[in-house]
Length: 152
Image (cartoon, rainbow, N blue to C red; front, side, top):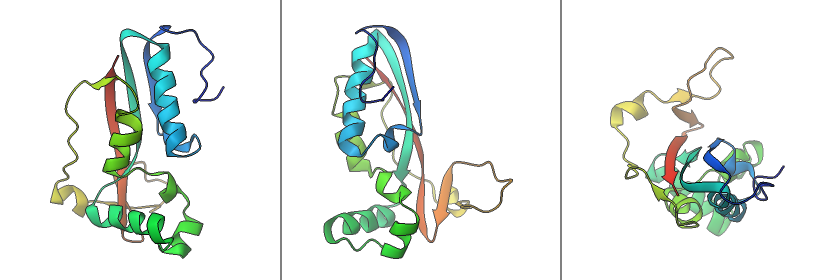
């Protein structure tokens, strides 16, 4: 079934898990709709565990904003790596995932990144044996995953 139309009754589940999928539901508005559906099917006190892709550095977020505003995201990269259109900026994560429901994070979201983490960014794809999914570097654009736990 669709993540934007969950076919279960209200207040059905103690927990809902979405790992690296909500960004693929059809755009940012669809992600917000999915968050509302997740909230609807959670029991009071239930936990939504959400992991999604997010731009890590301000420079990467600015590249994305420029692409959105002027359609000038390095077009050769955007066409080849459409995943960039599905990633969230910090502001989009706040707007589409957090502000779209009444659920509250279990802990404050910390967007800070240590320089040492960025220095260890994995070139993606580096090899078929790489299994690390922390910070990735694709043509100089750094991105990674963020995990959010929300309670209803």
